[in-house]
Length: 206
Image (cartoon, rainbow, N blue to C red; front, side, top):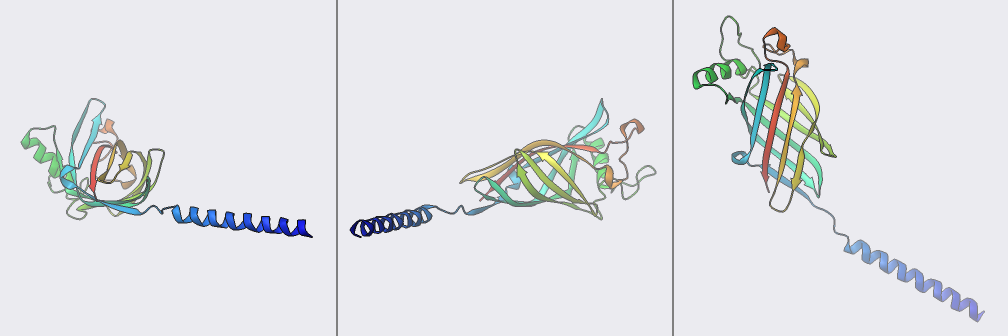
């Protein structure tokens, strides 16, 4: 009986020790807080390029109106951006020709070859909303609300964050063929093709 009593006392002591250790571990584990970063417009760039043929195309820039992402450690939990399509412009043409291309892309320069709703039709759709989804292994799911429709793509970007801010960088393409956008057509027809390339360098601050 004496040995049995000692045995149960030992088991009890071990149980108390295990519970104590478990409680201490739970207390010492710090929950990772979610941090929201806001777009720094002045230090953010978004370049675009589109082609009429393998040898000929145009390139330029477009600006964000707003945006933010939420990170929990290294995990992206939420994010969205608004692109101001009224800021789209060409950077590879002389000023006069760049103004014409800008008018065509915005759908504001009307002539016999270019109706009011050409390309991005900014009078009716001045912005494009971008919703960020899952991010894993350098691949980001994005959904664009553009011209009243949705386009989903998986694009290669690098997202990083620290105590000072966050960045999103990457070069990728988005295919707009499903939009049936006036002005886009296969390159052999002499029109701008449906694949637009983008070069994103987004800076965000806490």
